[in-house]
Image 1 (cartoon, rainbow, N blue to C red):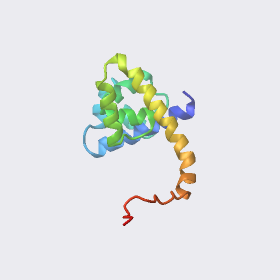
Image 2: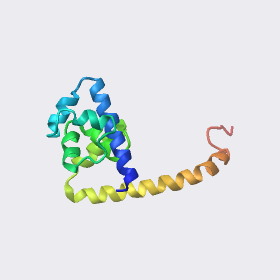
Image 3: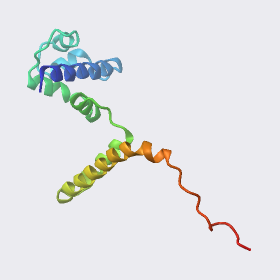
Image 4: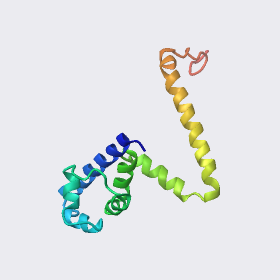
Length: 138
């Protein structure tokens, strides 16, 4: 991971932690204790003074978050209801079927990209009227 990517992830962690602090889900002291650090560790991190957080401390602080917050910190995207549904469906599959599901989703994604590339062309073409249907020939 590049330094820039690490900094972006730490910025997302600060964002998520700040939301949790604002919602009174935990305190800075509680998070510092979870990270097995001094009482002001998280406060210093939130101010930007702790730039070289160890992986152990990062992991311990991440454990205070819920799964969706963890994913956001790691990948930088928030989950939609559809994302959660897809994850639940894939998770319910037996391990032996998961590679097949991934293959199918990759094919759909490729078709979707091709479809986006062609969609503007298709939208400009009008289908010819269908003759002989819905009309009476009496």
